[in-house]
Every structure is written in C-alpha cells, then in structure tokens.
Length: 79
Image (cartoon, rainbow, N blue to C red; front, side, top):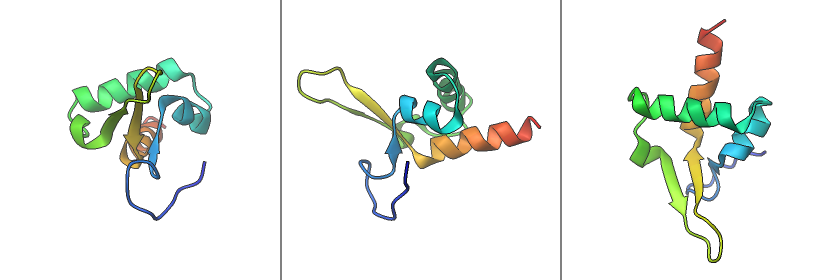
C-alpha cells in the first residue's frame, strides 16, 4: 500500500483488511486495537473514521493514517 501526499479521505485512508495486511495480523485483532484507541481517547473517533455508503454494498469504514500509526506505537511500546 502506498501513501500519497494528496489530501483527502480517499487517498490516505485504510480499511481494517488493509491494516491487517500491513501488520500481518488478523482483522479481529485490528478491530480490537481500533476500538481500544477510540475508547481510551487516544484518538478522536469522529476525526479519524469515515463510513462510506456504496450503492448495493454495506458501508465501508475507513480510518486515517493516525490510526495505523497508533498501532505501530503501541507495538513498539510493548517491546
């Protein structure tokens, strides 16, 4: 997955499945991590998550790069 310098949700946002691929983790673990980040107030949910409704499909939730970076920081602090 490539990062872009362009602003906007579509460019620098990631779904849970993409995060699981980045970290070689299961999607359930990513989901728990995201829930903890928001529950503990580490990041603001409204500013870091967007649900996109695509016709005939269930909503797709995307998260900002900050959510991914919080996963990295939590991993490093456990070492």
